[in-house]
Image 1 (cartoon, one colour):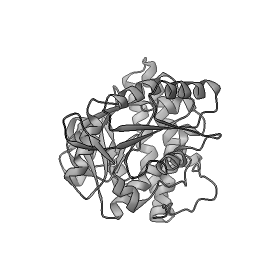
Image 2 (tube, one colour):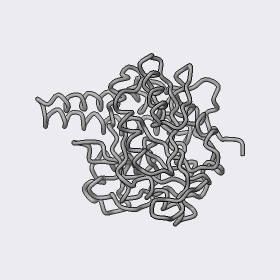
Image 3 (spheres, helix red, strand yellow):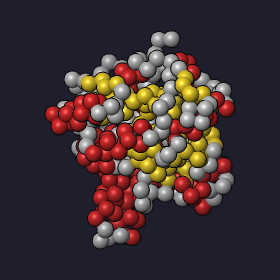
Length: 335
């Protein structure tokens, strides 16, 4: 589906999918930034809320016209199941996944949509996502193999950022925010052309949340399509805010599910499993210590340091958050 853009050119209809869980004011900012992108954007919200206040907010936003399609759920489906539920209602549109605590820069979606027209083998597109002061990396780069993790956490990728051979897990905002092919981009702001949905399928529902974006990116590149970072398209994601609010098991799902992805993808032996966890946890815990030493009196720094330490320990203490009955390998839509 396509419509006329503001400049007279034809624009694809982009179905934006936002998954919410007991949202607050950040959802209003998210939807306002989407509405400012243009008339070619259609907003789908899947509401996993369990509190009356969250449900009341999304229903009010629907009545005000800030949401085009509201898909309420009687249970918390997690991320991938909720996204897939919406995907089945978007028709043949391109899709943009967006977290409710993210906002887009002006013209971001139009830039991403225009890049799809320019290159027929693009499978996924990502804007440059900023995450506030103190975060120098973006949520994009290479798949979390032992080598990519070591290059990042050892500091080698930072010492020689222009050497492609030494690029690690994450790209740096001050060095790599240009158009380039990547192996992975986070699902917080991710553009999926309709051809990708048709050929690659839906997200894996193996995990309750976290891990599905890594698996999907790997599936896209394995199909022969490319993942492209668009340097001129920007967004902001309040990374860590929703995790801190959820707490408990949710705050440990990201590292545990990343380790689970590594295990089911590469089927490593005992030595490689231990090595992956050592590199991952040592990298995060060492950063936690450095942050605490640099800003011992800063409350925000202490919180970030505690969060990183918790993530580093999770790969030794926490199992993956699996949805029951889902195969270990893939979850593909019937085409």
